[in-house]
Image (spheres, rainbow, N blue to C red):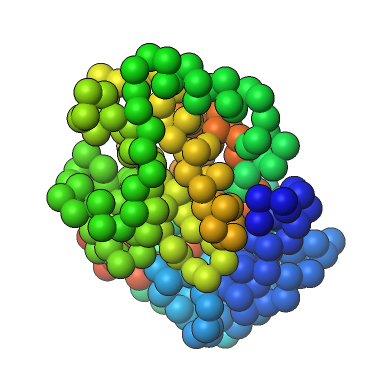
Length: 271
């Protein structure tokens, strides 16, 4: 996969999104928005809880909505009333959330997803970035799942997921004097795409370590013939900047509705 061009990278991501949503890859390129009924799907990202009540996805043109049949008209009215970008932001999202209230559902997850820019990922600028980190005395080491034992703590909660340990398959650690000070890990979320998360200890931030780890891990994933992707809330400026600095570019956005009880529990937990 390290010989893929950007067009092939985008096409591969759309193929996976089509599996997740129950649509066709070409639906993401249509001028008009598309609504499909959600269902269980072999090959979907493993952390998704299918079928969706409502999941909206846009690769920048239209919207593909994967929904429960009972709310098809509600969602259709919404995505035809507002422009694509405005469907993913307030105040318009309140309209959709209010419409979901009688069903005991609320808007929950909203995120932006990034794919590698194959020209940037392997550029001299990226090699220079990694070189500068190593010159500061940090050693980058390739890690496998067996190396993660003992690392499932709050320090590394973005890089690793304790609830899905079996999916954490590969990582790159940054070490100073033998001490782990930064970690990028990836989870095998589906057969073709592995998701990257990264953590750096606070006292070692703003030195390019996170970007060096993210870039190095992305290339290691591609060497294993998988496609790396990166997710961030668009309000998490630090994470978005890291994605761009590491050679990734925005690719698609998602909005997911969940039960009111689920959302309320997240709020109580300080999500």
